[in-house]
Image 1 (cartoon, rainbow, N blue to C red):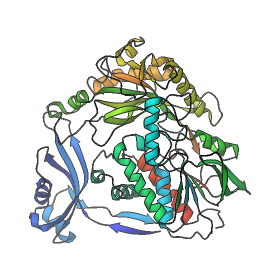
Image 2: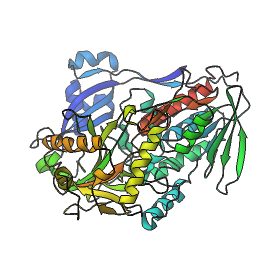
Image 3: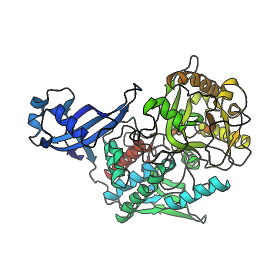
Image 4: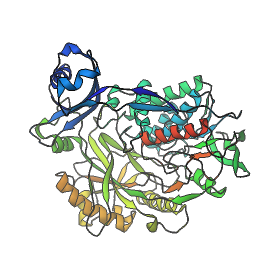
Length: 543
């Protein structure tokens, strides 16, 4: 595999005051390198974080890469600092085209995994066909707003399904725990398509729901310009298999009409909520296994309260923006609990994709200036907690919770919610207080213990107490717990081999729905890697 190599000099832990001017970083870099500012040809920020450990002394910490006028050979002698080093080369792998099949690859799903898989295939000249059950970003946004206003759910165009995937209606978070060099490639591609340039260096980057829509449309345009097709309102309904190999797919269009596409390569990038598609895979004999996932609720606090808790007297400083947090604990005799997908200055969103079920998630726009901040408070569910040993029983557990929430909320997609104080005291909530719930389909004062498993709510209660010691006021009595959050990840993993193929030749499970990713970046990288396998024609595929 060929590659493009980028080499720069790396500077770390450069402290910059909140009120510093735009030239402060270059001046600090010159001081650290013991050179004149004029000797620095370029400074590229690679990471920018807030150090708020001391509430009376908050500042930014930068990492940067620089290019010097006198070249890399003299940098060590001039600086002598352990905070200056030669940056490790960033290698972006590029696949070698070995595929000779005349058939066009098919990509099912147009979320992060599907977008990057299709883009990679298109750039290799393979003209992929994308099947997306939902609508394009503009019509999808209208469908979501209509659901929130009228409670009429479109099962194929909603917060879970449609152009951009579930991440389009979140915070557009780009944090990831994987170390694949392609992560940087994903960030660069997103920035090139219109995402804010700050994503290339923010320690906790996000795009914002309001900006993601235009970004995904720009990806679609390039794919089409390169000869690919994106078919919206086209739901994958079957895989045509012969001799344990993919020979085609069947999809259903908006009118309900079925059509076949002949192909020998199907990249399955359907997302964690495409339960019917996973059920189809199981029916045709694709091997899969149960996978742990998490459930819980969204907890909302006033944004200004979280800002003050994290930033003290610096709360509201224009250079800081809305504060975030990330908490985790393991209560005694319980299971682990953690906050997830924290949305500073955001809202709780109604994220249902099946009739008669309530699901919530979190969303922030780029400005992060909404009244509240929210996060999921989640507890792990292991396969032994599933209702049966059937490989798809995790879906059954999710549905049971979601349908119970629908009934408890009054059958109108309003979400059950409870004050944290009432939850801890074991009392149902009869009203809301100083924190106004932001769920757009409404929140009904309830007892969320009636819908979530007891081992989950017991752990949540213990975690609230422990997390309150980590972030003073986290368990404030009027904080609102809105439930249920059940779609943090898939409860099933579609098995694949070292060539990224399932037990059906030509079937490439990718991303969150297949159980191999947990967010926009990791899903995108997995989609790229799946496309590489098709382009390089690895495994037993004769083409």
